[in-house]
Amino acid sequence: MQANVGGIDRTLRIAVGALLVILAITNVIGMWGWLGLIPLATGVFRFCPAYPLLGIKTCKKD
Image (cartoon, rainbow, N blue to C red):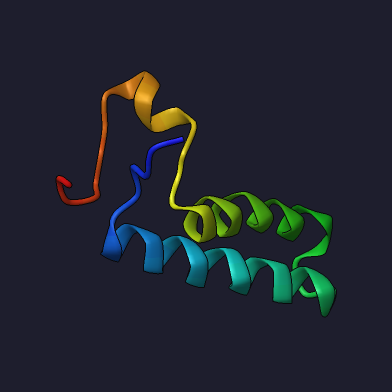
């Protein structure tokens, strides 16, 4: 797995994912908030499985 999620993209994914999970834990938005685990995980691991399919890479070249 080569990293394909860059800096700003990674930060936004982690922030939005964490916010959704927190809102789900506090029962503000219900069970749908647990979908925040997806952007949270892709931000933490710096890999999005959809990006290679779409030909997108937001991280800088090595």
